[in-house]
Length: 348
Image (spheres, one colour):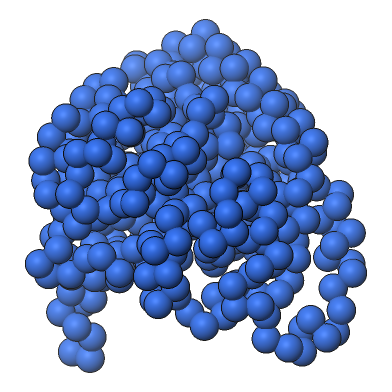
């Protein structure tokens, strides 16, 4: 057709996980929280007024900034609301990268990163993890304008220690964006780094631990100077009034959040043990999913057979992942259906 820029024409685009239309399925393929959001969220939703819908929303989402600042132990000007964590990633590419300013990240990791690099027409320095998903020592040497580390990493679920991230922040010459979309299910986070480093941005998501994937809400934590720069590239009203109200309510309900996270951690431990008993090689995970290596069977075939049973997990064709399945931690009932199906499939 010839209308698009050359890099757009050549880019395949990001492929989200399959979203089945029917409700009576076991959906363990897109790392959604298997439990509902806080009851306080539903109450807040019912109290949305026509006036909130008629008017433009607060462009900075001040109510959420204040709530998130309190939860994370920073000032509100360290917080920026985003239309999902993905918007923050896109903003970071726009703000820091171009043809002469590359991005660097370890691989395999979140598959949106290379897509955004191509859309921004910047060079992507992909530094391989080792077999244990340790932080690659050569990552800082790339001299990239933007370095991204997904921590806990997707799709491995592995976690890099805070001390290692401190060392990396000290070594990189550009901005370090720590993608903590899954950190709600880990034991440690890197929030403290923003107080010690002026080049660190933390990405957080309300989709995972707070069960709000449907409203698309995330946020950044960074020094005010970085936040001010990022605001220049955000949309005028990038988060809507309903989303601000719901996300603010959710992040304030700490008791419900903690109880939900603990249920997922307990099921993560149980599911990992059961999958291993079936002969799958499963890494310890710090996320709300596990990565299972299919040692004696084809991962692609198992994926297809599960799909035919209306059980959806994630299969990637990327190098190093062809023999693995990523499985979201479901409810006990969902996980039991998965395990029962796998027992049948692995006997065939």
